[in-house]
Each structure stands twice: as C-alpha cells, then as structure tokens.
Image (cartoon, rainbow, N blue to C red; front, side, top):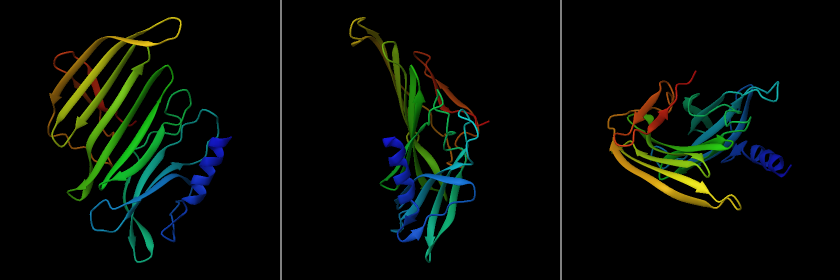
Length: 223
C-alpha cells in the first residue's frame, strides 16, 4: 500500500514542472519525469517516462515511451522520443515492473531497469547529446543468481573498453553466506558502436569475450 501511495504522489507531483503542465498524450500515464540541461545551453530539458494504455489483465505488459521536451516560450515542445529505451510494464520477470529510475548527471541521461526472480538482472544506460541526437555512451549491467554466479559488465562506448567480471559462488546450507570460489576478470575493446536512444534495441548486439567466451548482450532486438 505504501508503494502505491508513493507512486500516486509521484505521478500527481509530476504534472507541473517550472509552473508548466507536463504533457500527457492521450492514453499515456506518467511514470517519472526529470529535469536537466542535456545540450549544455543553460536551459533545462524535461525527460518523461510514460506507460502507454491501460492493463486489461494482471499479466499484460504495456509498452512504454521516453520523451524529451524543450521549453519554448512557456510550453514544453517535443524534442526527442524513443519507444525502445524502456521495457514493457511487466517485462521485469514474474509480472514485475522493470523500471528502475532516471536521473541527469553532468548533462548525461541515465536510465536504469532491472528484474528477475531467483536469477536477477539490472542495467543502466547513459546517453549524451551529440551530433544532433542522443547516443549511448555508457552501459553497465549485472546479472546472475546468488550462491551460483554473478556477472558484471562496464562498457564505455566512447573509448570502446569493456570490463567483464564474473564470480562463481557457493553458499553455506545453514545461513546461505556467500563464498566466492572462482573469479574471471577480463577486458576487451569494441570500438565504433553507435546506438541511438531512438533505436536502442533495433537490432541485437552480442559480444563474446576472447578469453572466457562470456556472451554479453548490449542490445536485444525489440520485437
């Protein structure tokens, strides 16, 4: 109940920013909105995450859209948008919501999502405005299962450097205290990847590390 109340407060407080009403397209619902200067013009932009439509069943996953607005005169005007940057409302596994939050740091938009049940996953995308669009410049992820294995990935798309760390774990049967019995650390480079916010999951991008042959999915094709 507390989470529901917090969500309702968040939504109700998100409709007005800088004294201006946040746009809500027909059949859209606001999840979260954040303000920040994304193009370094000393004027803050508005980023809004929306859910599209209304659930008709408990297990239905609704599409989502991320829209970036610029202030013109006294109105928020649509600037950029993406239906691929956010997963659906039930795509977190076991009918859970994968949305983790947004923030703007040093003109970089960060979007986090996570999910899973016994096997868990989470990742954060970092987008920067350059060449007249928003491009993925950083990707961090972690996934695995406690007491079995855990993999973390840190990909700097600007330099092309990827750091992959994998821990193999076991647990004491009595208290499930984790013990790491093997680690595999590896670095590799993949330069030249250009992934736009608008086309975040337009095509599958899978990388395989040269030493341990770990499969790393940077993008999953949006069906």
